[in-house]
Length: 87
Ligand SMILES: [Zn+2]
Image (cartoon, rainbow, N blue to C red; front, side, top):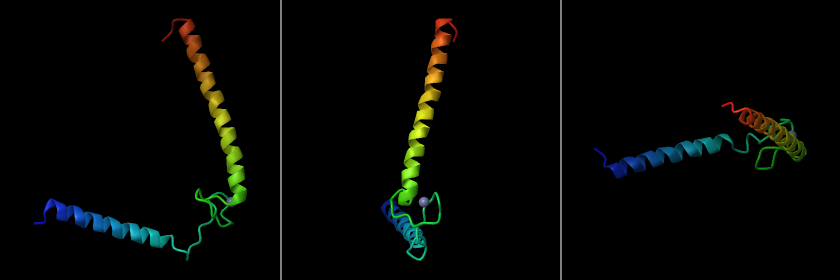
């Protein structure tokens, strides 16, 4: 029967093998393409090509603006409830 340390070592080895196989799947044989347009190589760490990275940035800003408006509406509703003594 393996000791706890040996069992942990075997698990670490298996994990290392799985990680190696996963890395191998992303080998240069399959170039990483942009996750947005899918037609251009994406050298950036987020997976966007330079053109899509710029567009994604502006979409992110718009999304944050919408989120701010949404949360402000909830805050206003919460104030409205509180002024009326509602839960
Ligand atoms: Zn792209």
